[in-house]
Each structure stands twice: as C-alpha cells, then as structure tokens.
View 1 (spheres, helix red, strand yellow):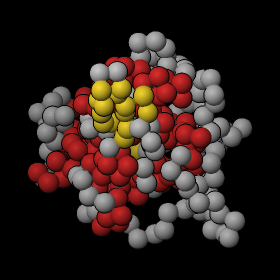
View 2: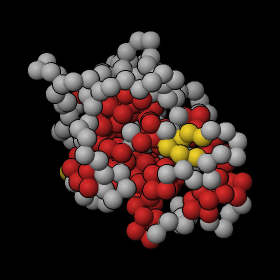
View 3: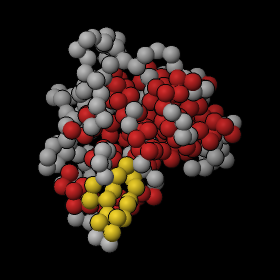
View 4: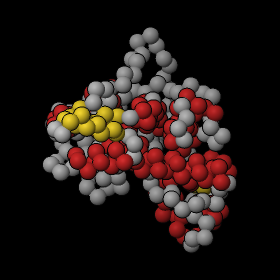
Length: 282
C-alpha cells in the first residue's frame, strides 16, 4: 500500500489493517481457518471438511495462509504432514463475532437466515475495497471532508479524480454519506458503527490483544457491543435504508459464542450462497 498523507503512526496503522484484510478476505480463507481450528488435520482430512474447493485449489490456499503465518504446516514424517492454525489465527477469532454483530445491526436483513460465516464474508468484502480503510480513517478523524481534501490525505501526489471511484463505492455500500455532488463526505451511521471492528482489527494486526480495541486512538469506544442475531445475506449487503434499530438487550437465554460456531453452520457439500464470479472479492 502506498503511503497516505496521514501522520506516520496513523499511516502505519492503516497499512497494517489493509494488509490484514488482504490476508483474510480472499474467497474461502476464513472458512479454511475455522475448519482448521482445533486439532491439526492432514490434507485429506481438511479436504473432506471443505469439499466445495475443487482439485488444485486447496494446496495454493494453504500455501498462502502459511506464508501469512495464519496456518502452520508440520511434517511429522515423509508421509505424515498436518496443518493447523497458529496463535495469530487464534487471536483473530474474537474479531469474527464483532463483524457479525456489526453486519446484523447495519446491513440489510435477508429474507431467510443463512450461515453466519457469510455474514463475515459480506462485511470483509466491503471493508477490503481499494482505499477503503484510509478513507474511513480520514473521515473518522476529520468528520466532514471535501473530495479534494480526501484525495490529498488518502492518495497524495495522485490525480484528485482517483479518490472518487472508491468514494462512490463506499457511499453505495452505505459506509460513507454525502448530501450530493460537490458536498463534503462523512461517515454514515454504519461507518461510525465499525469502531469495534476496526479497532479490533487494528489491535490484532499490530500483535496486540483484541481486548485493547477500546483504547484505539481513532476507533476507541466505550459502548458495549450489541448482540448479533445470526442473519445474513447471500451477497455483500448495503446499509439498510431504514433507521438503524437499537441493539437487542442481552437475556439469560443469549447463546454463548463458541470457537467453531461460525463454521459449524456451513452446508456439508457447498456453501449455500456464493458471490457471483468476478465480484469484488471473488
């Protein structure tokens, strides 16, 4: 990622989060990490848990995840090799329910409930857009910002017009708002609501405990995370057109998140909803 016009510490923060999103967002990556959570698996055992991956797809995916230090390959003997998640991946797991919570509160509600893993994938698609993290950081720090000022902060030295395609995309996605052409840009309620998610991703990408997300200098928050309702859409969703509902109150019947909860809802043959080929994340 090219340097932004932000202060050095903030620029490094944005770069780390952008790199983290680039590692975990590609198709099937989160599903593979969740499939490997627990006891290390042989290649054949893992392939049986992710049967929707065609021949020749699993090996390259595992190599990429190993290179990113998210998966560890252990060779016990010439014919005995296992794969398991690293401590880095284990530290990432608490971020996933935060993403589900945000998506459930701010994104359009589907007609039928689908696996929570798709909720994570939908949200990651929106956050991993080109220049998305830098734009969100600038708007959070500065409030309302004009297009030219955003361009100077996000992609200094580039043509001012280069900032408008990602801005339009983030506006369509419901993360950024504006009153019209030529008017300044600001975070939408959905963009503001990303504070727990982006704070946690920042902490994780910096090697810090996710529990420190509340102390993030930009995205720090003091409000408790609202309860998720485990619904999601079959494709990346936009901000709901209606007023954002208040978070649901916790009750004694509130289910506790389990480490394998996101993956356990996946269908045994193929994920129930796949984004169209050629989409932004696929």
